[in-house]
Image 1 (tube, one colour):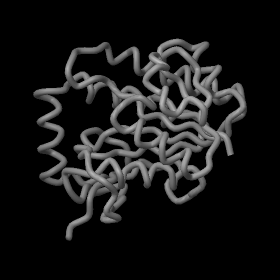
Image 2: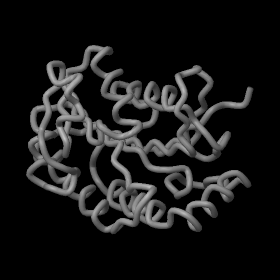
Image 3: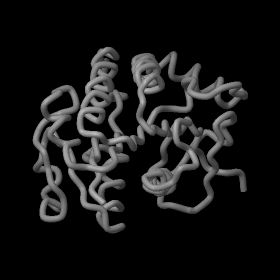
Image 4: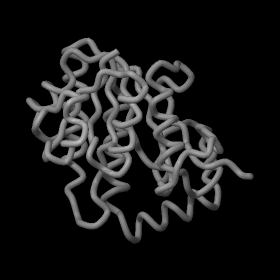
Length: 214
């Protein structure tokens, strides 16, 4: 099965692309700086470009069966949230054009995405923190979500809290209405994302994915 991965040189994406190759997927990926994927260039198909270029998006999605995006606004500098909204529109258009239905996207636990959600104390704290220190991230993710939920794609919006640089432990929960904890390991998160390629459990749903309570 051939899949497209957007954001493969980022914190989550670089873990994800390695796991996808090991799992036996054929991978196409979009990279602004292909040299960052030098170590894996013989195992994946690399399209040079970025997510804000419709032609680059289209070239990456063509001839694939599923698309995963780990793209997100940078935390260390300001960005224009509308750029990410427009990128989402381009992704949806390209997938519709090429007849690709399965789409998995990383959002965040600080924004809405389900029905009758419980805004527990930990989620309220996370949202407050983002409003104070990463407002553009919260706005961008919400704008992406507004585009995605009106599409005809078989989407899953994965909403993690803080992503820790830790290996998979298997201690993970997914719940559309309630956030269990304020962190998830990048190992567990990427395992969950890869599972969604073939799983139907969370199609057109937005699970809050975090470490479970021990």
